[in-house]
Length: 189
Ligand SMILES: [Zn+2]
Image (cartoon, rainbow, N blue to C red; front, side, top):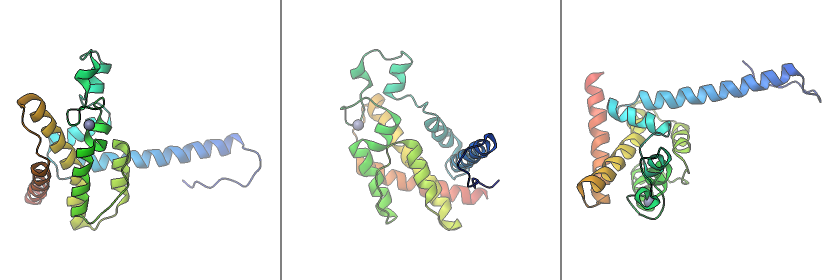
């Protein structure tokens, strides 16, 4: 369906309806691309599920646990990496300073410099905006999920097993996971 509006000074019901349908089409296309990126990349199924839950804002971060009444004190819900602000998907998996440094190292690996997206959905949309050749795309598409999954594992190991945060090791593990996932996908297809 085309998205052109008639050159009329008055908006008719028909033109408003076309505009609405046009916006709906754009939203639907965008949603389809996000869905495809999450569910059709090389990461294992449990990681795809994690990506989907992150997209829905349902990862059990501090802000989520406060919201549903599991946590009652704000200081229990602070970011497990910096301890300076309430933990959220956007902060603790993207914006928090050491976390952002991890993203920058992974992007440096690809020779890319970018402006920090401020939300998980901005990150995914930015990721989709980079066009890659098919052989490279299989690697590219699983990178954000390898980073998110690895950060979440680091956070949990730090919180529940008292493991020290080692960001260099974290970056190495992300790269290893990407290589392993892509190789496994190659074995399956
Ligand atoms: Zn933080």
